[in-house]
Picture 1: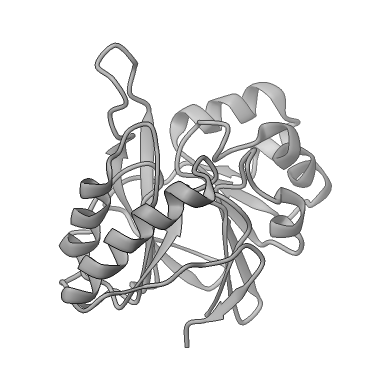
Picture 2 (picture 1 turned 90 degrees about the vertical axis):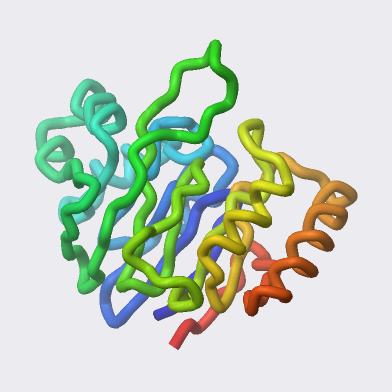
Length: 223
């Protein structure tokens, strides 16, 4: 399996002829990420994870491209897209595995991390791919079917309005993957990034996890 980051929380996974793209949002290189994609998986409705203005044209022009998303995202697509696109919208459910493009997917979670009690909470899915890679969306949901130290790659929300550094570290420690790769990092500048990374990397290593910086456009071979 190959993994490439295309900015913020947008991740592309490739295996054999299958290509999955997660969270092509406003802070991502959507066009590059979706080139040749087999399926799109959306964690939640926020624009930095689902840029409808750029994603929907890809769905319109690629008749075999499917999209998997929570109900609110699916509803918005049904309202604005053509019938032929609506037919390719799938709503997965927590606890019900499914297969797409040769990948086995498990869905976890249910809701976005709390930003503030006065703000409504939206649905959020975390996706576990082939038991090896976990994309949590905007949450620190721990995939309970994965034993500690068994996950190959944990995609870690690095900085957000709903988190603090101690929670980022605790998320990594709770899962203890072989590798932790940062996502959700478009909002932080280089100075802030260095401070946070130092703490995450140092403490993660004590629990057997290698925290690695993943540059946009660089492909990792996870085999």
